[in-house]
Length: 457
Ligand code: IFM
Image 1 (cartoon, protein in one colour):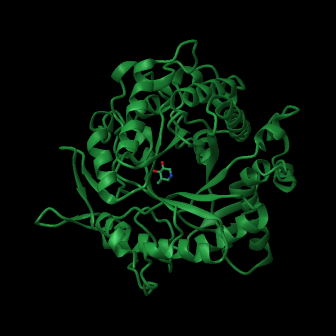
Image 2 (image 1 turned 120 degrees about the vertical axis):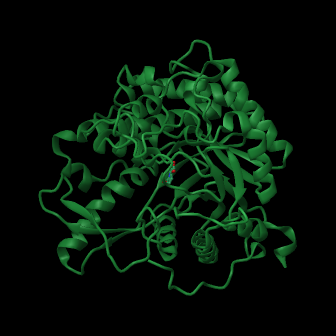
């Protein structure tokens, strides 16, 4: 549906606090390619993509944006945009090809060391994420996130990265969107490793959260002065109708979508109402686990894309809910609802209920079809408007007192969109995957102008 909402007054960079981090985000498997380079091991996504029917266009991240070889050009793009921060992820299988030591793969670590140096040389603060879904396949073969061994392997990996990069990196994010790793990967099976079971998913989820706490300890021990956080995908949840049944369904859905992560991370343990619904599928939680998960962090990362409309659906699954679509609302090409006000509402709620010291919007972005004009320029007015409207919402949240300290647009480049392959574009930069040519889109030009120092007053 076309945009009918009037644009709010255009946000200006000068309206944001000094020191605000302005970034773009990417992830290793989605952009790097170079899957056999310099001793990298196999990841669960390499394996997952091999099976037919998993990825919409039958593709994989084997080449992706070839960022592994073109990273200098990409960092120049980031500098050209005027970013002061860049969020990327480290591929665990480059560092430990089979998941664990004893020795790390020096060539793999060197890549990230060079990347960090390249960012700093360009005046851009590096924001690495340790896990954006690419588990070493060797660990999956021993049980993956369902096994507690993976928690310890992750802590060792975090310690190693902290030791090597900690002299230059201040802000580490442990996990990106654990809901997706756990539930798309182990319940729906639409993401690697492609498993389908509630107990498997809930146990994997617990181990992922536990590994976050263990990684925070490891990072602090190995990288003096390191700050640590986690990036959650959070969603405002709305009832599909004004019935009592749908209002109760919202509570149940929110229990898994949002509170299942926020509650334990903020020291409350798993939400009792949701736990009770899972019956015999609840995860095994050992003594001390919840204290480890609740390790105090320096920031909370929030990835915001869309709100969800929820209806009661008795018998549907342990939660008795379903996500429904309202045909009347504006959507992106992925069908995700466009609602900047949902961001304001979400941030208000997180501040009120959990009071994190600092929040970063670690991802926000949109998928639309790009139009390649005859002169080669890329028209993506819808993405530009999406960005503009969400930055206005960010500004409003700051005025309302939310301790929001930075914004990372998803994404710097079009890339491999997981099960959707290359059929979905989220970049501020268009990538021609046949030639690897990068072209800044209209949205990227807008972001660059917005960030330009001369537009401050
Ligand atoms: O591409 C993904 C990213 O890997 C995680 N957050 C959502 C993005 C868009 O789907």
